[in-house]
Image (tube, rainbow, N blue to C red; front, side, top):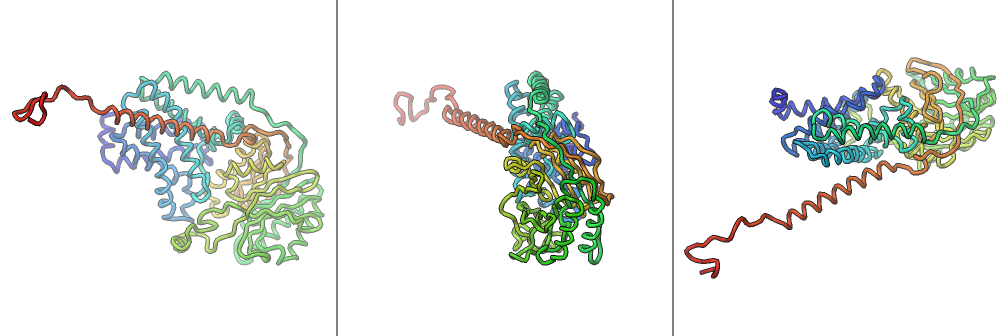
Length: 524
């Protein structure tokens, strides 16, 4: 231990160790998907910040760990963002500085049992505050929330129906804090063990008592994934490939056909020939088609990404314009200052336009669907609002064509499991080039994934469910609870500091005499 402390005495070595420790949780996400590792992945980072010689150094440990975490979780963006990924990580990593200081404040030295118990509540709450801030779309959105690593764990998905991915993040961090205390803080082992027991009890209670979605029929939904189509005239060639795959669905009793993001590269009002071909496909398959148009619109200025519903008689009029755009990928924040990003990466040459409201579409057969486009599936509030508005099925249209040989497609597909579990609504994740996936109302996977090499049309029997999950009913209550915990901490620390200031140092004794004065006659 002494050798480790001597090695960490160098600020640069310590910073490198913090960045490496912060990067470890990425192994819990797809593609490795070591979900169990999430429950101990933060322990090295916590132990490092706990041992910091000063509060300021603990803040730096938090910052560098945040940088490592963000770069690791978003490493697949390197070909697109280049140096920007490190700049963004350095800026957002600052959010973990207070968390690092809190780790040392509550666990440093020999903490009392009270401080140890407080750490089990405060540190997960502070982590949730970080996830809340960075979940803002302008800062990149909620990609890589720690709770999302539990997308394939049955009890965790049940907990997601109660408190969303926020509750999962809170519990995962709490377990990490408890494990760190068991390893390093002998005096706090009782509250640590109590925390682990409470977490196990809460998970068991959720498994037993959380309401299960009530089965209510079944629909057949087809996903059309054309695969990579590149080169000159790729828009027309992709459309032809999707058309060919969709024709294979005729006679299979399909209720809805879903194409991926940017599956149609032309405005359908400008290309009535394509609209007629889509209507013919609808008649041939006996199902409406939900396509995704990525084009400059003829009825208003700018480029939009839109989910467009087509029936046997043509465009139905149902349309959803994407609301939350990908920073740098679909628009450049403060383009007048950062526009030069287009010269060093694959940043957006022109900002796409935003939609203004979410839409629930009626596709016939009494089926109501709620579309989401691309990384909108990472936002739990959007799927929750669609469920509140009466959607029976959530539909995510995506394209990860630029990141085929990375972990991004698997990470993206896994998010749909959480959105399904949170809302009690099945979710279909359809992509151009994989991974396409379908999940039931409890977040369970239905059928095989369509991988990044697949070019196919696949039909899924999707069970429907009704009822409202606690998360849909009560919303992001774990976040509000975490903010209350942090507010209470702030008030407690403020009162404590005020008391110390008012009491001041006690005098050690009576004033001493001098040759010019005495206690009886000051000044003489």
